[in-house]
Length: 183
Image (cartoon, rainbow, N blue to C red):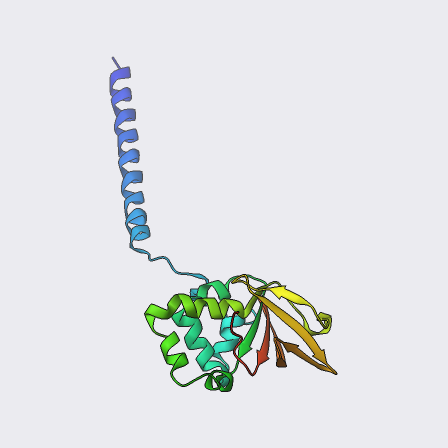
C-alpha cells in the first residue's frame, strides 16, 4: 500500500518538472520568431579591420559608389568574408558619365543594370597590384572580362589607371577614375 503514494508523488514531481520545462521554452521560442533576419553588414565589430563596404562608406570620394551598392542590394555581399577585389570608381568618375546616367541607374527599375555594372567592378579573390602583369585578363563576378595593362609604373584596368590600393579585411580596393562598363 505504501507504493501507491510514492508512485503518485513521483508522477506529480515528473509532471511538475515537465510543465516547468515547457513553460521555460515558450518565451525563447516566442523571442526567436520575433527576430528579423539581417545580413553580414549588420554585424557590429569595433576591433576588426574594416571591410570593403566600411572603407567605402568612410571615403568622401566614394559616396556615389556607396549609394549605387546600396541601391543594387550588394552591401551584404560585399561585407562577407570574400576575398574580393573591387575596382572602385570615384565620384569624379561617375560625373564623367552622360548627364542623368547615375540618377537613372539608381532607380528601382534599373536595379539589374546597376548590379551588372557593379559586379563588373568586382573580382572574387585578391588581385594585388604587385602581382598584376601586362596583358592579364580576369573574369569578374558578372562574367565579363577586364584586362590589365601596364604603362611604365602605372597599372591600368580596361585603360583606367589604378590611382590607389587599399587593403581591407575582406579583400582589396583599387581606386580608379573611370566607371568600367561591361561590353
